[in-house]
Each structure stands twice: as C-alpha cells, then as structure tokens.
Image 1 (cartoon, rainbow, N blue to C red):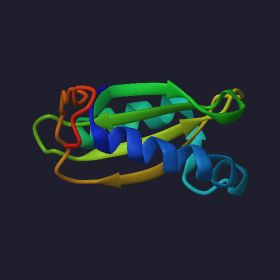
Image 2 (image 1 turned 180 degrees about the horizontal axis):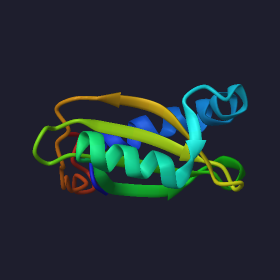
Image 3 (image 1 turned 180 degrees about the vertical axis):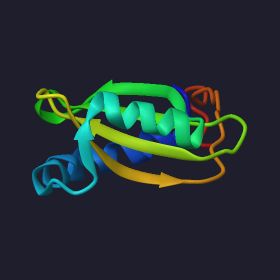
Length: 102
C-alpha cells in the first residue's frame, strides 16, 4: 500500500472512470500522456491497480515538486486524466492490530 490517499482516490476513480473515459475529456493515447507528465511535470508512476472493466488506474507524482496525477487507461490504450493536485506524500501505514479500536 503506497498511501491511504491513493486507495481512497482510486476507489473514487473506479466509480467515475468509465463515465470520464466515455466523455473523451482530457484523454489521449497512453504514451503521449505519460511523456507529458514526465517532461512537463517531472512525474513518474508511483502506484497502479486494475479497475472496473479492466481499466488500469495509475498514480503519477513528482518527488521534487509534490505534484500528482491520477489516470485511468482503457483496454484500448486511451488514457484519461481523472484528478491532479499538489503535496503528494508517500506513506507506508500499517494496519492496526486486531482488537485495537484506534
């Protein structure tokens, strides 16, 4: 688990992803999107997972600037930007022990 934020955001993305992908807004071939995130924002892939309808959900972020972007890529290779922001932070939180209400 990379971050709690990634998990919460990914859940929201999985629910909204198909609608965004169908709208065509902020979408392009995956290679173009990844190149743009790297060259313009210095972002690299931090985590990924498989979502509904075999869509790939990815989180890109920059260690130096703290910018982050969440994308959803359809099986056809079209990638859509779903969310972006600042102050990305990688976390490695552990689950609370059983019986602990914290």
